[in-house]
Image (cartoon, rainbow, N blue to C red; front, side, top):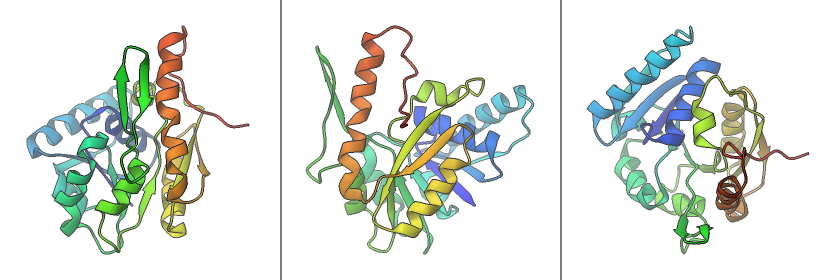
Length: 222
């Protein structure tokens, strides 16, 4: 299984790339709008893994070429770049590729961070609108604290709700999530439920900002 992380040079992309490279045998491909930047970051990830005694290869490419090589394509870009990013790789996706969106629409004011869904109702639904009709879209990894995710010395104990209208695609992404040690995927139903999941992210950010020792806050359901 090959996973491409479009925008894999950013915070959530970095964490997912490092965790999959460290915990699984999946092929990890870091994508960026610039191939040179993708390669530079992939080299940094390999160096960090090596410093921990982990022998892993992290590949790289420009976003369209990275997407063309992957079975699962994670659109780890901000919500406002999501549609453009999907459109830029749409004609390069494999026939059986799966798109995954962890993006959340948010806005900030003096009171804190607030959920800011697009007209489609959720960012995951926006991704589904932008994707080719025959490419299933899955929403996952929305509520993860990026700093802790990228810190391989930190043990995770989080849940990640997963939504999709295609049950087979959902199952594949849940298996990928379960490959990360300490991360438990939970089936949250269809994409129609994505807004409820995405809206938890600004809540977690506000709790972390206003309470000591909660800067790596995640979600766990009991």
